[in-house]
Image (cartoon, rainbow, N blue to C red; front, side):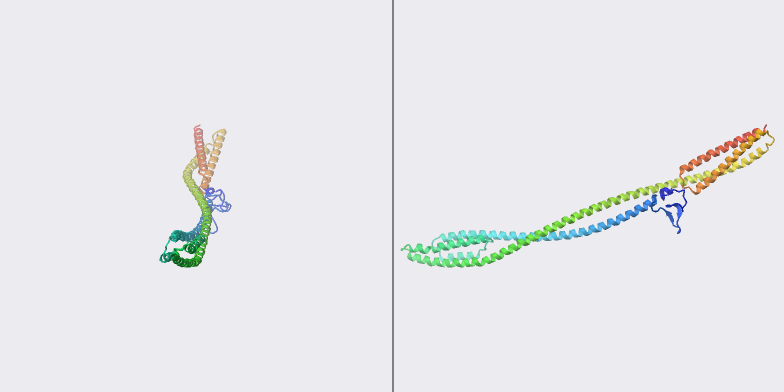
Length: 392
């Protein structure tokens, strides 16, 4: 059992055994079993348990690092969501501004068509022209400078058409009075149109400011998109690190499972060793019982041998050849008795050091039984021959 449990043969003393033994103790009285380089079940189990603890500590450290990375990932996700929300907000405002600009452009185009139609009409009164001018002032300007330039060009063409009314009216003598009236109306309309042009020039600055604001909004949107890309890149990097840590964790878990399996196998081997030790102990107990029986039988054999020796000694008057044979048989019986006593002593030593396996003990018990039978047979033969000599 000692080689399987402690890792050293059991036929060495505790001082000579580097791995100790089941019954060995150190100077402090502590049991000494196993050590460095020992391959017994106990030291191997101890080393496996230590390795499992180290692996468990490493796994805890990896899990701690994993928790830190998960926390950082959550923070990055919050930043990404915030940046995405801001970008969507800016995009929504940009789309709303574009919608308003498109709506304003459509309204302005409609107004241009209306003012063209109005200028094409004859006999327009000053009230209607003033109403048209007020509508021009109330119209929101589009966000495109080219469209504003187009609007200014159309207004200049309209003014040029108004300036040509004087020549038309002066060419007809019959409509002179009417031409003068129309000239006055045209001049008033021109002044009002020039006022509208000044208003348009003033609103150009507001348009430029709006365009700058749109540019700033676009820059903010690009910055937000860059932030989102940077956040996504960072998330990908964190995910890669997470995958690496998950791989290490899986590897550590597999390693821990392998160590657990090895510990279980070593525990099975330990149980097998204890079972073998128990079987050896049971065998030693049976050998002890057989030894006690054999001791009793040897006592009886010794008593009968003494009696037989006395009987043989009484055959002094027998012929020399027969007496020599009896003497030789007596010596053989004595030798067998000594062997039986020696076997008994060896069995007692075997009982004290029952670390040997059961098969060896069974073989010795078998040889002892064979020796006992041989002694009994020889004694029976001596008895028969002694009786034969006594009746001669």
